[in-house]
Length: 492
Image (cartoon, rainbow, N blue to C red; front, side, top):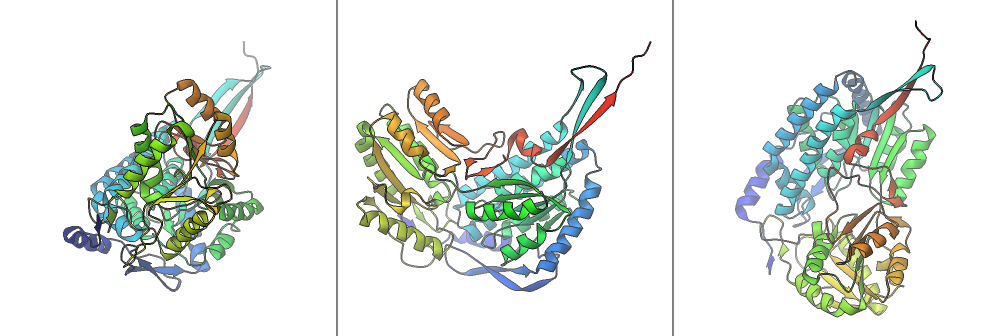
């Protein structure tokens, strides 16, 4: 079943929500950039194409405001962030509707992202009070060693299009909690959610100017100019590995502290003893959340031979039955992919796999009509030389292969330069932990398809990035440690 058109009531409310998105306060532009609805292909807004000079102006404004913010108490920053959380929840409908229109996220998932994004703000409101430090005697005596954690300074936050609110708050909240100002550059495909989110931050009490939003069609020029500015002391980026590597090279010239959450090629291992129904539920959640457009999506599904046929039958049936359509319908489970380039890329990956011998069980094609839709697709027995096995799929296409032994599965899983996430499905606790410890990934889900949690350190190893977001480690990414050595004289 498919829903080609939006629910009329939700569509009307989304138009009102779009009207709540503020205009940029920065005036230096070189024209506008259109923002399209991927479900229809229609333009729904324009945003400014800021110049490099405007970006540097934003750096100055955020740096000046950040120096004042750094002098506030942890309690004050915590109170402001708690107020931001309440403001975001109060405006969850507008945020979800704007997100659904510009990104194509099904409305139920959009509401879920708003809560998830707001939860980061609440988490770091609490972490602001736990900035940490230490006071201890030197091992040899005669001195007291004191360490303090303080704000790293002006932070440049570059966010992706697939989670336009959560990726913004996951960076903004710890930056503000630590006492930093920020320049945010959202993806031009989904900037409206960020503009609205920052507006709500300010309405809740974040000082005007502390957060600057820059939108530009010249991302490389922006990065080159801003990261060459000595006022910038931190860069956090979520996106592809090649872009992350280029940003690290730029940041290295001024020794800018860097966090990079980069590409993934997540393996999902299913062993013969796995609970079949729970496994299918978990794989659907991991693979199809956000239409497969997540960096931790199950990219390579590896199934042990004894359960493979039963899994393929049940999983294919579930995939074929997903409700596709305009995301402004509460019944829709699969919305559009983000743009026409994504459709073309998915079609290429499917065609290449089938040409090399993969078994197409369901789907496999772009959907005709308005918008950028692709069928929920299952490819079985995908050969190792298919491009899809080494590429981050980022769409509703599942690549499935079989394995015989645990050793074979682990070797396949680790045969990649990426190491963001992995998944294990088995009823054996010993096997689950042994495999999880052997996988070369920063995160592992055991008998579940959802990894993200504000209290957990999110990040990868190998070419999937450096640094962590969320948890207490997420705050430390925006702090510097200072150490004082105090000589002590004996007193009588």
